[in-house]
Amino acid sequence: MIRIVLFIQFLICDPKLISVQSISRHGDRGPEEHIPGFIELIPGELTERGMYEHFQIGSQMREHYKGNSGFLSETYNSHELYVRSSNFDRCLMSAWSQLAGLYPNGLSDKHIQGFPVQTELKQEEFHYRAFEECPIARTYDDEFRKTDEYKKFISDQKQLWADLSRKISHEVTESNWLNVDDALVVQRTHTEVDAETIELHDRLRKSVFQRRLQLFPGEDEKWLKASIGLLFGDMFFQNIDADLTGLLPSNAPNPHDASRKFRLNLAHDNTIWAVLRSLKYPMTSHPFYACTILVELWIHEDVLKTATTKAELEKSAYLRFYFQDEQDKHNAGELWKEMPLIRGCKDQACDLTTFRQEWAPFVIADSNLIQTEYREKRCNNTNFYPPLPKKSPSALGTEKARQAMLIATIAFALLSVVGIIVVIVLSVLISRKKKSLGFFQVPQGRSTNYTE
Image (cartoon, rainbow, N blue to C red; front, side, top):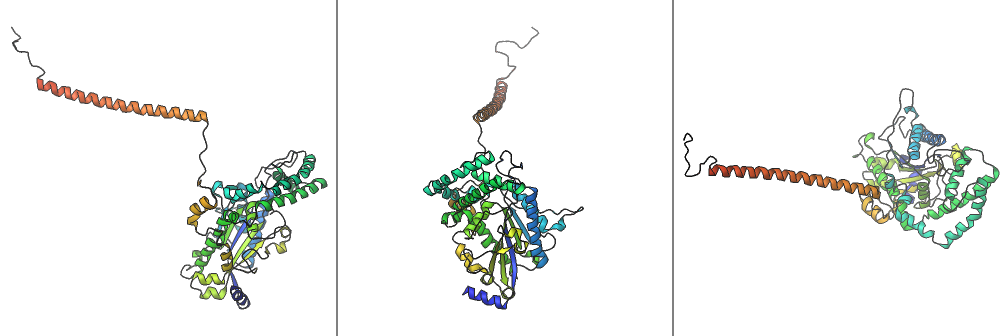
């Protein structure tokens, strides 16, 4: 029934773009592990190329959402935009680079526009890095490593690792082969590489892709709840509820009171993997640097004019999903390519109600439940803050000695005070006793006439 209503609305009504949410991987960065003889870059840090990649993304967003449609203002407006980033320098710098491309008017000789970017403790990044921070999310792969399938997979790689070790003069093993792939990606991006190395690395890339498919199953219920429960709860429930509520006349008397139109998220390849695998997107390659997922919320104009409740708006609302694959990155004409049918959608114009019904069992839609429901049950991580660093035995001995000295000092001070009080009390009592006996009283039988 909802599909029929949407189809009729497509025919007779003009839809209106309400909000956009994006998730981007950080840009080009230095490798996590340096291989002797390879290009030297700061490990894990964003490169100039990575900054430019995100500046281009921002510029393309500006052209599409400001130049063509007027959806966003020409200059930065905090009421329209919200930016959130993983707490890694490469992600934070990618966010700033993307914003510089989105609002280039903010940079000049006489003016620099600052952009607030929200972040949180790395240990608390369950939205973007659940796989690293949630024990339950990691359990799936821990169990998979014990299977015969995984053991055979690793065994099949050993000849390739040996050939690659010989070629690059650096040992490739089960513990570092993913980092070696990462270093080779950087090397091929920044320098010329010979044909044999390219052939070996292309084979390694296929193995890495297969390993990622194992790491991100996309079907397991526990994995879904732990890996995308918070992120999808924010994007498709809390944020969209705020968008819909802000459209109601009683809640939005002027544009500045409405909810934000654009929300940017800067994260990692694992975040992109988790989202795409959860949505059952047909992945064919590893998410490249600066790749971006876009989610647009649309509602038909006639509904906006007549709706008085959030439920009325939701019935007419639909989502559109876009993603850049490797080919689109080099084809400006198809930069924002619409996704094929994904999980929870029956059409590319994905009606919001159907999508939410599909994902409701997996998400945390109420931020008040994050502590109890997510951390303790879905994630099995009860440490809200990172534990204090453990002290060495020598430091502990020194600390105990200090505590003993402090206790002794306090005890001595208290005893001194008590002693002084006792002396004063005794002095007063003795003085009173002497006065009652008469201090100058002469013994009986003695004369008081000293002139005798």
